[in-house]
Image 1 (tube, rainbow, N blue to C red):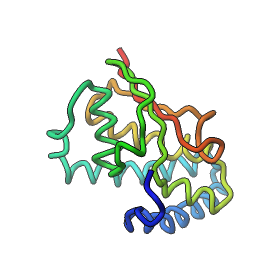
Image 2: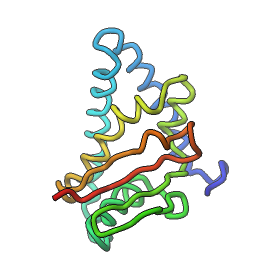
Image 3: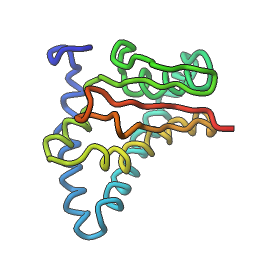
Length: 165
C-alpha cells in the first residue's frame, strides 16, 4: 500500500473539491432530500468521467483479458490510476471479479471530514459513475459494492464487477 507521502498530489487536491461538493449536497438535500441531492452530484461525476473517456479512448487498446478483467483495468488502472497492489483481487472467474480496495480515496476523505456515512454517499453518488464507464466498454458489465465491507467499517472497500447474461 502507498504511504501518505507517496500519494499523488492530484489525489490530495481532489479532497477539498469533493468536500465542497458534499457541502453543496448537504445544502441541496434540505430542498430535495439526501438521495436526490447525491444522485444529482452523481450526474456531474458521470459527466466528468465520460469527458475523460472521450479524451482517452486509446486506453481501450491497453485492456486485456476477460470482459470483467477489462472493466477492472478500465476503472481502476486507466481512470483512477490505482496500482494493482492497492486493489488485490480476492475472486476472479470468467464472469466475476471481486477485489479489496485499499487505495487512497478522496471521496472517503471528504465523507469522513464531513461526518457523513460512506454507505449512503457511495451508494448514491459513486456507483453510477463507475457503471457509466463500464457501460461504454460493455453494457452487460455490472458494478457493485459490498456495503458490509466498506471503509471506515473495515480497512478496505470490497467491490465487484460481473458480466450479466
